[in-house]
Length: 277
Image (cartoon, rainbow, N blue to C red; front, top):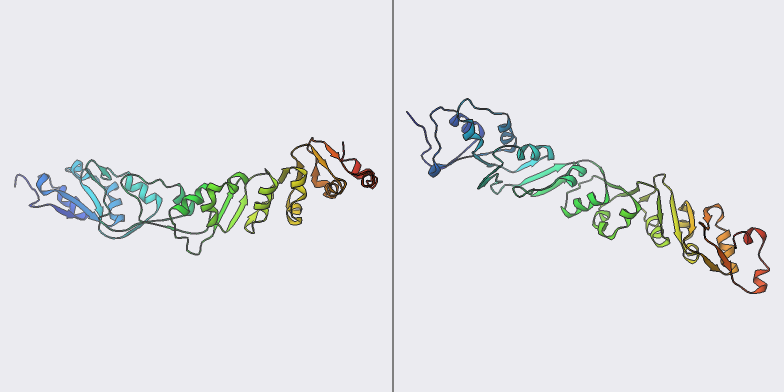
Protein backbone atom coordinates (compact mmCIF):
# COMPACT_ATOMS: atom_id res chain seq x y z
CA UNK A 1 0.00 0.00 0.00
CA UNK A 2 1.17 3.50 -0.76
CA UNK A 3 -0.47 4.94 2.35
CA UNK A 4 -1.70 3.56 5.66
CA UNK A 5 -4.45 5.37 7.61
CA UNK A 6 -6.88 4.55 10.39
CA UNK A 7 -10.46 3.85 9.27
CA UNK A 8 -11.86 5.67 12.30
CA UNK A 9 -10.71 7.59 15.35
CA UNK A 10 -8.79 5.19 17.57
CA UNK A 11 -7.12 5.19 20.97
CA UNK A 12 -4.18 2.79 21.14
CA UNK A 13 -1.65 1.88 23.78
CA UNK A 14 1.82 3.37 23.63
CA UNK A 15 3.17 0.14 22.14
CA UNK A 16 0.38 -0.13 19.57
CA UNK A 17 0.58 3.51 18.52
CA UNK A 18 4.36 3.43 18.20
CA UNK A 19 4.24 0.30 16.07
CA UNK A 20 1.58 1.78 13.80
CA UNK A 21 3.15 5.20 13.38
CA UNK A 22 6.57 3.70 12.71
CA UNK A 23 5.34 2.32 9.39
CA UNK A 24 6.89 4.44 6.66
CA UNK A 25 3.57 4.70 4.82
CA UNK A 26 1.45 5.75 7.80
CA UNK A 27 -0.43 9.01 7.43
CA UNK A 28 -2.74 10.87 9.79
CA UNK A 29 -6.33 11.65 8.93
CA UNK A 30 -8.10 14.46 10.85
CA UNK A 31 -11.36 12.55 10.43
CA UNK A 32 -9.84 9.43 11.98
CA UNK A 33 -7.55 10.83 14.65
CA UNK A 34 -5.07 8.67 16.51
CA UNK A 35 -4.73 9.08 20.26
CA UNK A 36 -2.90 7.17 22.97
CA UNK A 37 -4.57 5.90 26.16
CA UNK A 38 -2.39 3.97 28.56
CA UNK A 39 -1.17 3.70 32.14
CA UNK A 40 0.98 6.52 33.49
CA UNK A 41 4.25 4.51 33.53
CA UNK A 42 3.75 3.55 29.89
CA UNK A 43 2.91 7.11 28.90
CA UNK A 44 6.10 8.27 30.59
CA UNK A 45 8.01 5.76 28.46
CA UNK A 46 7.16 7.93 25.45
CA UNK A 47 9.98 10.19 26.54
CA UNK A 48 12.46 7.50 25.60
CA UNK A 49 10.95 6.52 22.26
CA UNK A 50 12.39 7.78 18.99
CA UNK A 51 10.85 6.19 15.90
CA UNK A 52 12.66 5.48 12.67
CA UNK A 53 9.68 6.87 10.76
CA UNK A 54 7.10 9.54 11.55
CA UNK A 55 8.54 10.44 14.94
CA UNK A 56 6.93 13.87 14.62
CA UNK A 57 3.51 12.26 14.26
CA UNK A 58 4.03 10.30 17.49
CA UNK A 59 5.07 13.47 19.29
CA UNK A 60 1.93 15.22 18.04
CA UNK A 61 -0.44 12.45 19.15
CA UNK A 62 -2.79 13.27 22.03
CA UNK A 63 -2.27 11.20 25.16
CA UNK A 64 -4.39 10.28 28.18
CA UNK A 65 -4.83 7.81 31.01
CA UNK A 66 -6.43 4.42 30.66
CA UNK A 67 -6.68 3.74 34.41
CA UNK A 68 -6.49 5.39 37.83
CA UNK A 69 -2.91 6.38 38.55
CA UNK A 70 -0.62 7.41 41.40
CA UNK A 71 2.33 9.65 40.59
CA UNK A 72 5.23 11.33 42.33
CA UNK A 73 6.19 14.93 41.66
CA UNK A 74 9.10 13.66 39.57
CA UNK A 75 6.72 11.61 37.43
CA UNK A 76 4.32 14.52 36.91
CA UNK A 77 7.28 16.68 35.96
CA UNK A 78 8.38 14.05 33.44
CA UNK A 79 4.81 13.93 32.10
CA UNK A 80 4.83 17.69 31.62
CA UNK A 81 8.07 17.45 29.69
CA UNK A 82 6.57 15.12 27.07
CA UNK A 83 5.93 16.89 23.76
CA UNK A 84 2.45 15.34 23.78
CA UNK A 85 1.53 16.87 27.16
CA UNK A 86 0.14 20.21 26.09
CA UNK A 87 -0.71 19.96 22.42
CA UNK A 88 -2.77 22.85 21.11
CA UNK A 89 -6.40 21.81 21.40
CA UNK A 90 -5.55 18.30 22.59
CA UNK A 91 -3.72 18.46 25.95
CA UNK A 92 -3.11 15.47 28.18
CA UNK A 93 -6.36 14.09 29.58
CA UNK A 94 -7.06 11.98 32.63
CA UNK A 95 -10.04 10.61 30.67
CA UNK A 96 -12.06 10.71 33.87
CA UNK A 97 -9.61 8.58 35.83
CA UNK A 98 -8.06 9.61 39.15
CA UNK A 99 -4.53 10.97 39.17
CA UNK A 100 -3.26 11.06 42.75
CA UNK A 101 -0.04 12.81 43.69
CA UNK A 102 1.78 10.71 46.30
CA UNK A 103 5.06 12.10 47.62
CA UNK A 104 6.75 13.73 50.59
CA UNK A 105 4.98 16.60 52.28
CA UNK A 106 7.55 19.13 51.16
CA UNK A 107 7.38 18.03 47.53
CA UNK A 108 3.58 18.13 47.54
CA UNK A 109 3.64 21.61 49.09
CA UNK A 110 6.12 22.89 46.51
CA UNK A 111 4.29 21.34 43.56
CA UNK A 112 2.59 23.88 41.31
CA UNK A 113 -0.45 22.79 39.35
CA UNK A 114 -0.94 23.98 35.78
CA UNK A 115 -3.80 24.51 33.36
CA UNK A 116 -3.59 20.93 32.08
CA UNK A 117 -3.56 18.76 35.20
CA UNK A 118 -4.63 19.23 38.78
CA UNK A 119 -4.25 16.02 40.79
CA UNK A 120 -7.54 14.58 42.00
CA UNK A 121 -5.99 13.78 45.37
CA UNK A 122 -2.82 14.06 47.44
CA UNK A 123 -1.20 11.47 49.71
CA UNK A 124 1.81 12.24 51.91
CA UNK A 125 4.51 9.60 52.28
CA UNK A 126 6.52 9.64 55.50
CA UNK A 127 6.88 12.26 58.22
CA UNK A 128 7.67 15.77 57.02
CA UNK A 129 9.19 19.03 58.22
CA UNK A 130 7.85 22.08 56.40
CA UNK A 131 7.44 25.81 56.81
CA UNK A 132 4.16 27.31 57.98
CA UNK A 133 3.34 28.40 54.42
CA UNK A 134 4.02 24.89 53.10
CA UNK A 135 1.79 23.42 55.81
CA UNK A 136 -0.93 25.83 54.67
CA UNK A 137 -0.66 24.37 51.18
CA UNK A 138 -0.93 20.82 52.53
CA UNK A 139 -4.05 21.83 54.45
CA UNK A 140 -5.57 23.62 51.47
CA UNK A 141 -5.03 20.54 49.30
CA UNK A 142 -6.62 18.30 51.93
CA UNK A 143 -3.59 16.02 51.80
CA UNK A 144 -4.11 12.53 53.20
CA UNK A 145 -1.49 12.47 55.96
CA UNK A 146 -2.16 8.90 57.05
CA UNK A 147 -0.25 8.18 60.26
CA UNK A 148 2.59 10.48 59.23
CA UNK A 149 3.67 13.43 61.36
CA UNK A 150 3.86 17.07 60.27
CA UNK A 151 6.49 19.28 61.89
CA UNK A 152 6.47 23.00 61.16
CA UNK A 153 9.83 24.71 61.53
CA UNK A 154 9.63 28.47 61.10
CA UNK A 155 10.15 31.88 62.65
CA UNK A 156 8.00 33.12 65.52
CA UNK A 157 6.35 35.65 63.20
CA UNK A 158 5.25 32.93 60.80
CA UNK A 159 4.16 30.57 63.56
CA UNK A 160 2.02 33.36 65.01
CA UNK A 161 0.67 34.70 61.70
CA UNK A 162 -3.13 34.20 61.62
CA UNK A 163 -2.93 33.48 57.88
CA UNK A 164 -0.96 30.31 58.70
CA UNK A 165 -3.45 28.84 61.14
CA UNK A 166 -4.80 26.26 58.68
CA UNK A 167 -1.31 24.79 58.43
CA UNK A 168 -0.71 25.06 62.17
CA UNK A 169 -3.91 23.06 62.72
CA UNK A 170 -2.49 19.97 60.98
CA UNK A 171 0.89 20.12 62.74
CA UNK A 172 2.10 17.65 65.35
CA UNK A 173 5.08 19.79 66.39
CA UNK A 174 5.95 23.48 66.05
CA UNK A 175 9.67 24.25 66.05
CA UNK A 176 11.23 27.69 66.28
CA UNK A 177 13.78 28.10 63.48
CA UNK A 178 15.58 31.20 64.79
CA UNK A 179 15.95 33.40 67.85
CA UNK A 180 12.83 35.50 68.39
CA UNK A 181 11.69 38.72 70.06
CA UNK A 182 7.98 38.71 70.80
CA UNK A 183 5.40 40.58 72.84
CA UNK A 184 4.04 39.19 76.09
CA UNK A 185 0.80 38.18 74.40
CA UNK A 186 2.64 36.35 71.61
CA UNK A 187 4.96 34.71 74.12
CA UNK A 188 1.91 33.40 75.93
CA UNK A 189 0.50 32.03 72.68
CA UNK A 190 3.76 30.36 71.60
CA UNK A 191 5.01 29.04 74.91
CA UNK A 192 1.53 28.03 75.98
CA UNK A 193 1.15 25.77 72.96
CA UNK A 194 1.88 22.17 73.96
CA UNK A 195 3.20 21.50 70.44
CA UNK A 196 5.81 24.27 70.62
CA UNK A 197 9.55 23.59 70.91
CA UNK A 198 12.10 26.42 70.94
CA UNK A 199 14.74 23.96 69.71
CA UNK A 200 17.49 25.74 71.62
CA UNK A 201 16.70 29.21 70.24
CA UNK A 202 16.40 32.26 72.46
CA UNK A 203 13.02 33.83 73.10
CA UNK A 204 13.13 37.46 74.19
CA UNK A 205 9.87 38.82 75.53
CA UNK A 206 9.78 42.59 75.02
CA UNK A 207 6.84 44.53 76.42
CA UNK A 208 5.65 47.00 79.04
CA UNK A 209 6.36 46.40 82.71
CA UNK A 210 2.74 45.52 83.41
CA UNK A 211 2.64 43.07 80.50
CA UNK A 212 5.85 41.35 81.64
CA UNK A 213 4.54 41.06 85.18
CA UNK A 214 1.27 39.63 83.85
CA UNK A 215 3.00 36.65 82.26
CA UNK A 216 2.33 33.26 83.77
CA UNK A 217 5.04 31.66 85.86
CA UNK A 218 5.62 28.99 83.22
CA UNK A 219 6.01 31.57 80.45
CA UNK A 220 8.49 33.57 82.54
CA UNK A 221 10.51 30.42 83.18
CA UNK A 222 10.56 29.36 79.52
CA UNK A 223 11.49 32.81 78.18
CA UNK A 224 15.19 33.54 77.76
CA UNK A 225 15.05 37.29 78.38
CA UNK A 226 12.32 39.60 79.70
CA UNK A 227 12.86 43.15 78.41
CA UNK A 228 11.11 46.46 78.78
CA UNK A 229 9.82 47.97 75.56
CA UNK A 230 9.34 51.46 77.02
CA UNK A 231 10.07 53.58 80.05
CA UNK A 232 7.95 52.52 83.01
CA UNK A 233 6.40 54.05 86.11
CA UNK A 234 5.70 51.36 88.67
CA UNK A 235 4.68 50.87 92.27
CA UNK A 236 7.01 49.49 94.91
CA UNK A 237 5.38 46.08 94.70
CA UNK A 238 5.82 46.02 90.93
CA UNK A 239 9.47 47.03 91.20
CA UNK A 240 10.05 44.21 93.65
CA UNK A 241 8.32 41.82 91.26
CA UNK A 242 10.49 43.00 88.37
CA UNK A 243 13.63 42.62 90.48
CA UNK A 244 12.41 39.16 91.40
CA UNK A 245 12.70 38.14 87.74
CA UNK A 246 16.44 38.01 88.36
CA UNK A 247 19.02 37.86 85.59
CA UNK A 248 16.30 37.34 82.97
CA UNK A 249 15.05 40.89 83.40
CA UNK A 250 16.52 43.77 81.40
CA UNK A 251 15.47 47.42 81.27
CA UNK A 252 16.71 47.29 77.65
CA UNK A 253 17.93 50.90 77.77
CA UNK A 254 14.71 52.21 79.33
CA UNK A 255 14.19 53.89 82.70
CA UNK A 256 12.02 52.86 85.64
CA UNK A 257 10.36 55.42 87.87
CA UNK A 258 8.90 54.30 91.18
CA UNK A 259 5.79 56.18 92.31
CA UNK A 260 4.35 55.15 95.67
CA UNK A 261 3.78 56.24 99.23
CA UNK A 262 6.70 57.18 101.47
CA UNK A 263 6.01 54.16 103.64
CA UNK A 264 6.20 51.81 100.70
CA UNK A 265 9.29 53.50 99.27
CA UNK A 266 11.02 53.02 102.63
CA UNK A 267 10.74 49.27 102.25
CA UNK A 268 12.97 49.16 99.15
CA UNK A 269 16.44 47.63 99.39
CA UNK A 270 19.55 48.66 97.47
CA UNK A 271 19.19 45.78 95.00
CA UNK A 272 15.69 46.86 94.11
CA UNK A 273 16.62 50.54 94.02
CA UNK A 274 19.34 49.73 91.50
CA UNK A 275 16.62 49.13 88.90
CA UNK A 276 15.03 52.54 89.43
CA UNK A 277 16.35 55.58 87.62
